[in-house]
Image 1 (tube, rainbow over the protein chains, first blue to last red):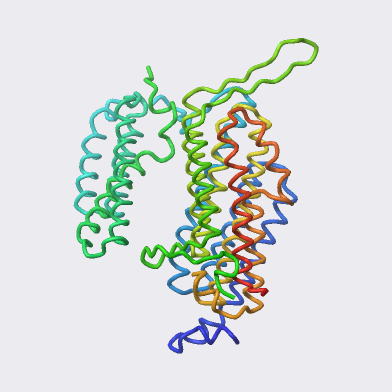
Image 2 (cartoon, rainbow over the protein chains, first blue to last red):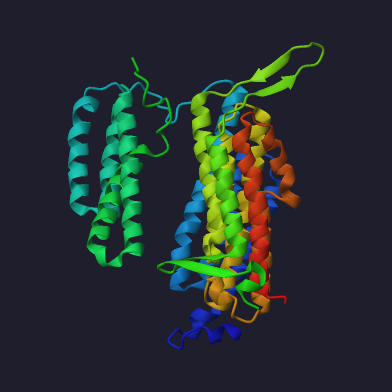
Length: 228
Length: 225
């Protein structure tokens, strides 16, 4: 096998022999997905089935199995998610225009206008954000973001103030820039790695916090509206 | 064969860790051309679409709000920068990522329009672009598996194998689907009926430039001469 030229001898032959089965699995899965798409008339089902083809793409990349391939899976996954989100947004806005009415992002069957939603969310959100700041990095961002998301969802029954929401979006953007600058410093001036590390760590903390808090609802009227 | 066979004079590289951008006369020219067009599109005034009507002498004017144009201008600039990056990158996977970004941004430019027909064709283009990400990234993965590297500066010295040829054919299929050229153009053609013309031009320009660049990359990988 010509591939063995490139593979170091420490890698067991079982791992090397898994490459071809993995590639065939991916191609087979993609073919099944494509056959299903070609028979499908419902747009929503087509969109969901397209994800199968996208996942076969990830299998193809993962089959290579080197550390370089591992670092390629994440961008592949992000591209995949970005595309599916963009297309589903198009599908939603098309259906809304066809029907001529808008739909709530999170339709609540009940009017949840309860006293506890006024007082408890602030305390729990502050607790989660403080713990997230202690953790820093991606994990901390996820924890603190959960806090913000909890706060927003609880307050949704009364409406989140417009200005606060746009301010959060702005801070998220600035933190993202910090993160990027941190990475650029790694590449351009590796001797300042401590600065770069802290820029990247706190940038990603703040960014993931607000990103999880914002999840796709930034531009929606949903949270800006004052409900009675 | 080396990079200068196609690219003319080799001007230099920008080493950013293991991400290497390189300049030859050919791709420097394309890079500069894309940047100039991006700047022209970024500073251009917005247009409103005028349609003649049947049975009357009046025209129908479609206006687009300023807020919508702001988002579209931003996406057009992102698309231009992604195209410019695809011109000078020396890494096959970076190239595929730039192409995928162009695909997403193309959907984004027309996503906010109010015409149902345009949204319909944008949806179909999006489905094709998503399916095309399989051959796009799969082709790059095959090239990685058969050569052990993704750097064009290295691949140019490695003798071509059958798997590399197969990978580069997949790569071409992926780029064709992602930019919506020849066999897939039917999904994309209707998208141009959107009002708001200066920002739509970048969709044309990016697919044109990316096709020129992918042909150069395929020739570098397969070394026919």
